[in-house]
Image (cartoon, rainbow, N blue to C red; front, side):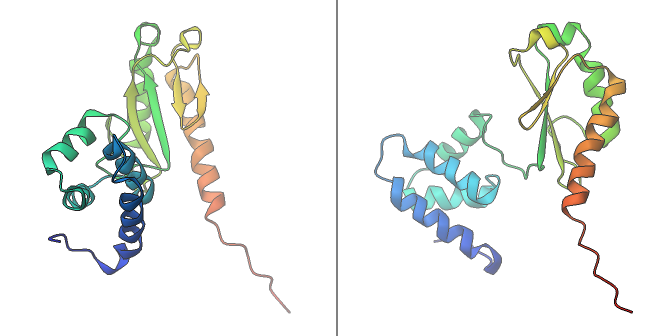
Length: 176
């Protein structure tokens, strides 16, 4: 194979080999393999796409065509929390772009980007079917509706605070 696998990547590529072996004979296997590969790696960089292309003897253009066509596949690392801002008609009319701008300002990222700490990824989406709550955002599986730009800092703070709590080591007991 022409792909150089670094020492720290070996375990993930071994898992990918198992996935490829399991599904390679199935109809429509490429999408399933790509989904499993994304579960393993967190996203689908060109290195992983090339590896799958070589292992399945499928042109890289076919693999990349599927990855770029379907919005469920990511070619860049994603944040722990994906913020999706609905820009469907009802949300747009009720101020979704102002909410989107507030999120961009607060996180200092643009649509489609991930914060430096890999905590948040910002996306826009079409109607999510919660028009009565417009404007709406989702953060992973949580839904927030009837938003104004002023609501954004406190919503984001909740996730930042939760993340920090999860990463603070327990204080060791001090013995006298």
